[in-house]
Length: 447
Image 1 (cartoon, rainbow, N blue to C red):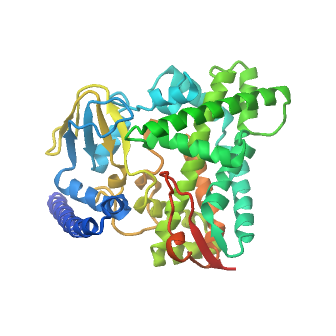
Image 2 (image 1 turned 30 degrees about the horizontal axis):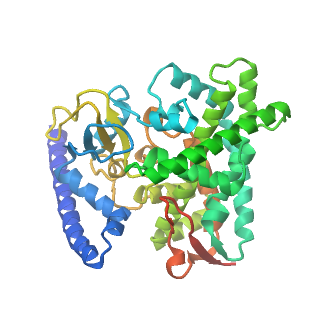
Image 3 (image 1 turned 45 degrees about the vertical axis):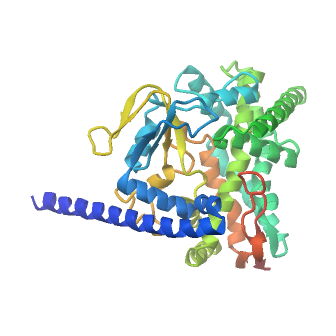
């Protein structure tokens, strides 16, 4: 009885705190938003992670789920927009694959000139065939045995040779994952070209909400070039076999064993999808994590202490917590396959119409006080389950295990350096240029 009464008072207190946080976030949004309006910086204001976090705090408190007839997403067919912000509802949407489908298939087929890639597939034979075959080619043990040691060695060399001044994007955060595609995937191609191809094609597939026609033209041209390169790489490897334990060789071994989905076309399409997901993802997430740590002197000092003491698990926790505050993507979108409900039998229950695009706010979910302990504090002892960094459920990023290993590994040598700091002025901030991905980020340290 006492426990039940206690739980009631705890629940009431939690609700009051959520409402208070929402009100305070609303006050800050209005005040700082007006300031940004007068300064002509409204777009930059709303792109800031702290602003988005406050918007989600307001929504969680007062309008946790809502539906619009307006089509925010232009790149994929839909009948309107719905947004969910509570953690339980976000996970519910991402777990209900029959009700909320992935939508990337049409653009994936444009990139491959006909075929889908498993990130754009619903559950079924094609999805099972391709993911099973690629997990045989990209073995989980490879991360510790091949990928991580190579990334550690390369990152250490890059930082040591930088002389205390480094533009980390072209020299480190793009270089290390590109090297992985060359030495482990077996299809790295020409470095700068591959980095440009994969960055633009990732943007086209996953982040081009407005369906930019100029980006579409660029993507179609670069996808054609990437297909030609991969077709040539596969033919060359078959003509001149090697014994390197890379993914391409493993795919060809599976092909020789008549493994379903491992035709030359199937191998090419799967490699194309893996390449698009590897280089820009690792680079951007690394930059965002480091940017957040540099904004938090205490967290930066703690992360550096962990790096110097070779406490790799603790150091990685700093990276994941930084990405919780400064995420790679704030929402994950799905499309309703039929009329259904989110949070039925609750006050926040929402009907979702067939064809509506549902934005599941994973950024918001990671700050939901009802499920996340001390959500506004920077903590390095959170369970991994608190984070939603690389998607969730069946369509979590195929390379999540690689990302989890490589990102802390490539950042560690940098964080070991004395007096790590931003370069003066604008150079010390992340420069995305005309893209949605970091192009430059200059740092300095005492060598």
